[in-house]
View (cartoon, rainbow, N blue to C red):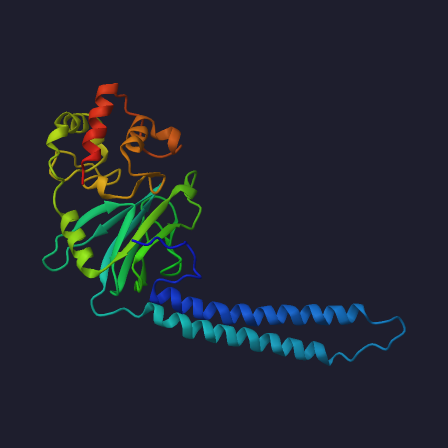
Length: 305
């Protein structure tokens, strides 16, 4: 799957394309005004001593022009952004909650498809409108995937929503765009847009319980016996915690720690061994483990497909 550069100038969705169509005319108009101001300033500086002062009517013309420009830009912005709030009949609903410092992503049940919860990865079907229902679990966050849509804040105690319609398959990077604490810069989320058939298969797999990793029975025992099960959920096990991300299909994700490290066995071991060194201030405590327990636990987590 092609990974797109994170840029509002490379739209992969209908809403981002609409915003880009507004962006360039605004830049061109304001650039022309800037050049005109520089030209007038230069002419004023070139006036020789003793020359008569020019009449004051240009100031009035400039003032009137400023008012017209502001009115025109306001009207153009209204026309461009009004369609962004037009919802389709049956958009895909995804619930996203910002946490310090990761993203909880929940897909409610839809028809015969059961609901499930994942983290730090958002998968969307190509060509279908999506309604992102946004909430904050602690402080103000801001969801932004520039290739697909504009920013929308997540505010504690208030529910916001963002509509987007992916038009090009690929991998897009989203992030928190509102300073939310120590690890704000390390709060990323990958958005994967894929054909509807692939999305349906992924959704069915994610809704299922974790595959039983027979080769990691000892790791599962460690996971359930230690503090891991108090904070995390692995469907199909006794782990029912909700403080941290749902780990049912952890190994199917592309990264850990909200984009901090790639999904590898070594990265998993490093994170479990000392999460505070890798991401200071996060809410995962240091769990003391022997080397054998760490190896067994890492084996278990690496098989959670």
